[in-house]
Image 1: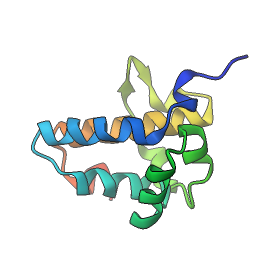
Image 2 (image 1 turned 180 degrees about the horizontal axis):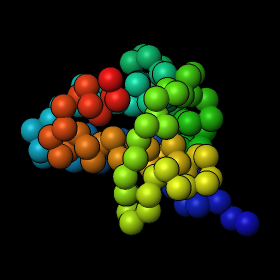
Image 3 (image 1 turned 135 degrees about the horizontal axis):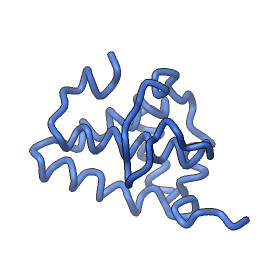
Image 4 (image 1 turned 90 degrees about the vertical axis):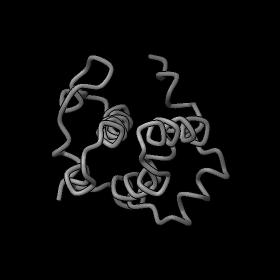
Length: 116
């Protein structure tokens, strides 16, 4: 079975779209970075290195220092699919991130986005 195209896309190529989506709704790049760091365990410096290396999505999540255990609390629909029902682990991680960015763009407060 062939891998989904998103797995081989560089995280750096999609990252500006996450920021643009947030900024269109009055949110900030630092909030996007905070979400990514919360989800993956990357430090800001490590995140920037991954962006510079143009790491693909599959590697980005495979090398994540510590995926947040609270990510299992992320529920809802992204692209017509319930994130909690996605069986393929890497795709689920990608969709968790998409869902968090959607919540940010919808104006949800950071404490709720980060499941505090």
